[in-house]
Length: 536
Image 1 (cartoon, helix red, strand yellow):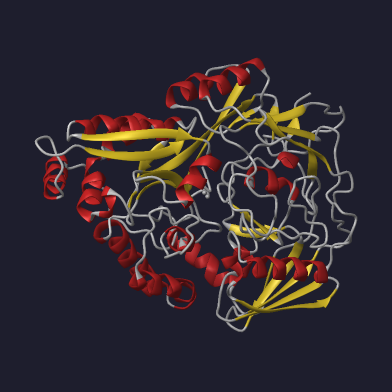
Image 2 (spheres, helix red, strand yellow):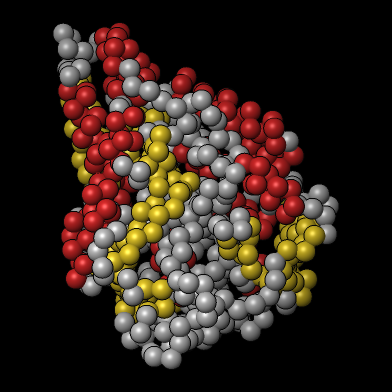
């Protein structure tokens, strides 16, 4: 929200070192090889007995909003990441890009020229052959579409298919193209002649293709193995996958205990504690780059008054919310989570009800003044967002503010948001690749037709600063850090366009017989089904 829009936390110094080494002239990165499914103990892939089971993922929201790999920018990442592949994939353990459709790469001329050697023997789902020309066409089509996260390719000036297995990029300015090519959105390589917007067929190179898609149904989407996948198949891998939409978290937990689903992306603290002692279930935890945004309508309605927005920021019980999450989230400091370049310490928000009441009074609202009614939308079935809304509603009621909160399916909430249809919009955000730029470009840059700028902020000074971030990050890291901090002060403190209560910690529950699961927060809530095996 991109729902519920990344990573094991990499320290700033580590990320700086990564970018520096990735841009070092002439350095070779990556290595060939075939992906191998792993067991939970890191040993050899399970083999022998055939796995006829269907792996069932239980999201609490609708799965697909856009089938086009060029423009997709929402929930469907959990499916499309198994259908499509990029040149690289981010490894959250090594904190580097790893080979995918590219086996190795070099950078030269201070990070402005990149050459990728491509994997041979790869076939698209359409039957067409993957080569440098096909990859070039896919990236150029994504750039031309200018949808979703296509901005990731903005540094690219020219793409050349040197030969069938060599792809060369010339950049306008230095950028970590190996990380960009690992993005969770807009980096997928596909057969441009086989893209189907209706979800009847797929045009990727990944291990799975569409089996059935029934929008609005409980089992919305099923996938099946692509028999000609370049990585090959072993008997114990899952060849069938289903996405069973389960809005209520208690229902998902019951289904997991019964063995009817295999993966629940989020449990509340009480259920997660119970899952840790349930024999048929195992749990997994990891930090993330995914934070919660409470966006205030700066363009219309009562929140158009900055004093009202500042009062709402001060009314949130940040400490109480973090405590109630019981380890599932930690207080945020600014927009950028710790570990990304641009994180600003010392910006942790604090509740101040006396100041909130004073600001509301200046705006003409309060206990002895006019009642303020505000509309708020949030994700249905998300217990953490519901907790925020419950606590905030209770607090605001004491200030003569009525919060008319409505839980909604993401598609409906997003459609309403794009029309400017609410005073407060609650959603998650995370970077497209390990860089903070997407928060600022997508969520806070002026837009005539807002996609994710759901505070509807329009500020030319902020826009100009946002446009400078990519090149500044590549050429003057210290200056970029200062610019990120200044931008966060303007957006959060001066404009009061958003409150950022917490950064999530991923807490998963899955069937105990599933082996090989590893969370990769660069691809939030994605399960790479090909890596899994079922214990015999």
